Structure formats: C-alpha cells, structure tokens
Image 1 (spheres, rainbow, N blue to C red):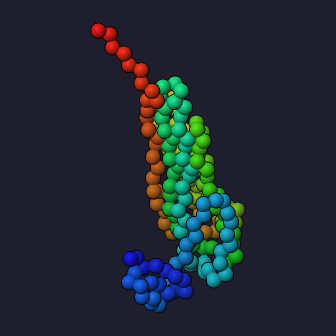
Image 2 (image 1 turned 120 degrees about the vertical axis):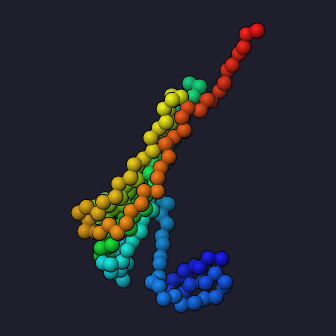
Image 3 (image 1 turned 90 degrees about the vertical axis):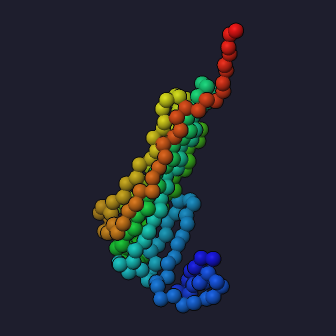
Amino acid sequence: AAVQNLGNNIVDDGAGNLILSTYPTLRSQVLDSTGTFTVPAGALSTTVFKFVLIGGGGGGGDPSGGWASSGASGCAVTASFSGFAAGGSVTVNIGAGGAHGSGGSSSTVAYNATTVMTAAGGAAGTQANNLAPASGACSVAAGASGLSLVSTFANGAQNGAVGVAANSNTSSAQ
C-alpha cells in the first residue's frame, strides 16, 4: 500500500501505521467542473501550487460519407507556480469535450483574473480519409499575474486517427 497523507502531517505509512511526517502537508483538490477557490490563509509567497490541466477532446467525424476520423485530444500540461498571496482567487475553467463533429473547448487557470495556463481543446474529426485532426496546444506563462513559474511539463496530446471506414462495399467480377 502507498503512503497516504491524512492531513496535519499525519500519514499512513502503507502498512497501516499512522506516523508524524517531517515533510510539509501536501493537499490536493480535483475539479471536474469550472470553479474558483481562494488561496488558503496559511499560504506563503514561497508555497508552490501545482496544476494539471487538460483541454476537452474533439468529437468524432460524421461517418455518413463512408469515412470518418476520430476527434483529437485536448492538450495536457502540468505547471507549478509560486507567489500566490493568501486570499487570492484562482479560477479553473474546465473545457468540455466536443460533440459529434465539434472541437473540444479549452481549459484555463487564472490567478486574480490573469490567465496563466491554457490547454486548448482538440479538433473535431472529419469525413476525409486522409486528414488527422490536430490536437490542442498548450501555453503557460506567469505574465502580469505576479506569480513565478517554477516548472512546466507538456504531457502531450494526440492527433485524431486518420480516416476509419464506416462501411465497406466491395464487389468482385468473375
């Protein structure tokens, strides 16, 4: 079993023993819908906040023409920032996946109304048999937010699959 942080620097060592950790408490929050949170009162300007952001995937193409490509993935990016002020506002916008034939929408992180991360949505699939829709692109920049970018990692994105036959009509003459 893995070490599990139970808060207040008390951790489960994986063997069922509760021990006092000498490391700072790590906290996490998973958002699956758009939301805003306030930087906790105990946060220092040196506190590092890590964000993992994924853009919405594109919807698949229309197979009525005999071929259709899949939608592309949204970009996935991880970034860590310091410089948050206690009481500051962080807004996370979760991009939606695209419906049939539509691209996915972008996901963003903004601090005090300044966007610091964007993970663009993937393009929609097409009816063409030779075009792979493009995956979303990522951007990370502290900009005028007053934050310092500690690290960033583009986790990657996947273009859509090239034309998949939706139906097959073959005949042979003898």
